[in-house]
Length: 108
View 1 (cartoon, one colour):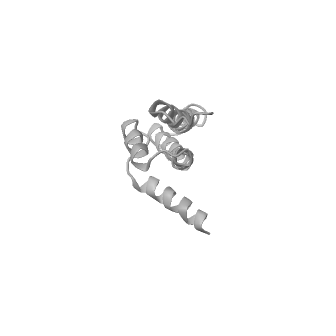
View 2 (cartoon, helix red, strand yellow):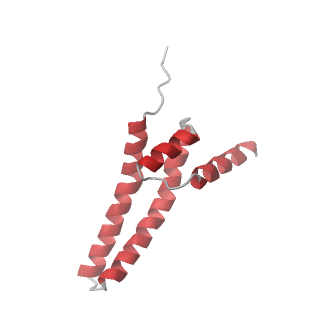
View 3 (cartoon, one colour):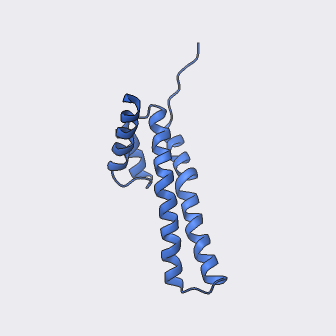
């Protein structure tokens, strides 16, 4: 008989960091470095471009992380609390939006 092991808080946070936050920070810093050193673009402008690209990446991948957590039966309230504490999420709207879109696709 197999035990149904739930996802731990540590696993949620680690996957969130490894999938979302760390790559987004690497994108921001890499774009800034390339634009400043190779293209000789203004430092402030380079930070904004890097931040925008990192944010686009974060916005796409945070949805994947939430979807993964919901598919693994993580409660929405628990996901929000862990996401807020670990600086992965800022509001419940993203979780509710993904949860509602998943439930609508199951009904069809």
